[in-house]
Length: 152
Image (tube, rainbow, N blue to C red; front, side, top):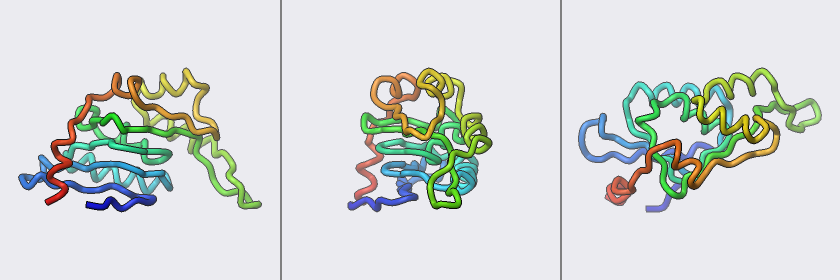
């Protein structure tokens, strides 16, 4: 099964049972507008679905960490979270950091994530990545048994 990549690459994998057993897999999601992700993840939180982070989840995608309960998120060895300051397009078309939106974004993250970001200088225009052992120490590992069901 070929995965669709792009701005909102969130692939829904159904385990073939009740929706409480459904799984949402995030991979190759580069983010987008904060409001769009807040809305999407509020719906996801309400659904009770489990989130598998199995690749890049950057920028606004990382809001999932604060919106979905910790016990409903797992990470694979390919999980890679990218964090940076929020920005708007300036009059010249260039990215301009938005301090208020950056603070709002930062406040959405769970304490361990905020601590990790702070230890690296905070949210700046430069992307910082949380992956590997550091990420696996914060979230439970997930096993891609559900991945096999995506081929059906």
